[in-house]
Image 1 (cartoon, each protein chain N blue to C red):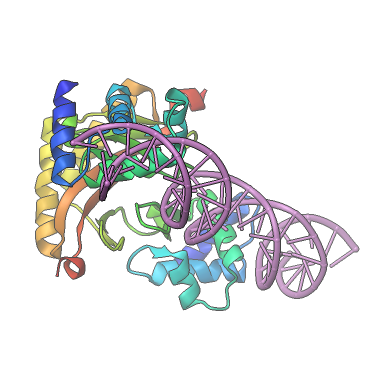
Image 2: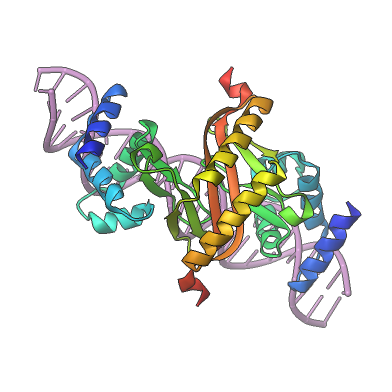
Length: 144
Length: 144
DNA sequence: ATGAGTGCAAAGGCTTTGCATTAGG
DNA sequence: CCTAATGCAAAGCCTTTGCACTCAT
């Protein structure tokens, strides 16, 4: 995780921000999590953190490109490390309970998607930043 | 659009619901729109509708599989006709202004994605419902 | 010392809900 | 007639903001 810390320090500094203890705790927590976390889940795991600081710091970390916010139809937004700190992946979203699980797809598929998207960006004049490829379904627990 | 009305009537009835004038207006509006609409946009176009009824009816139409809710990082949720009433498509989302535009990708790409997703569903035990393939970027208007 | 960061509490704002009225079958 | 649907207003709830205090430099 020292790697993440270094990147975080650098990227925050570039935005005129510091890598404080609270922010580091958030990064550690997200790095350790297997899937994106909601703020209630974060507060559960780190009772010492103030809710407002968590919101503020996650927003700040997002602005510095360290964290990514995922909005589903669930009640809460979820947060995970930015993609360049982990590996490119997608999400399995349960339409019933809202849980999000990380998955990867074969490079072949990624490549064909990327090519198609580049063409679309070209046609439409959109300046492409990234893509989202999510699977929506019912998780095993909810299906039972 | 009679087609849509027939499907709507049938699908609502199957859920024990009626296809009322308000609900029909919503369906018409969404069918006519080139891209998913927010509730403020809907109220603008149909000033006669009550906000609470719009929320309630859209929720109901969603539950009956006639309408789909799209959540972005924008302030408002957006609504469009369910995919089986239009054609399978994806979204170009502007990360700055939140506007959503419909796009289609080549069948070849769809096929490769579908195959990969079926495999993932199989491995993970998720009961797959649908997938989302969104492009996030900056629209021409915001890039200017 | 001085500005950024923090925590508590209160406010915001999209969305949902209660309730009396109206419409549909 | 009798249940569902509507509209207005009020409440909910996730998220944001104000402000005084603390910490790091």
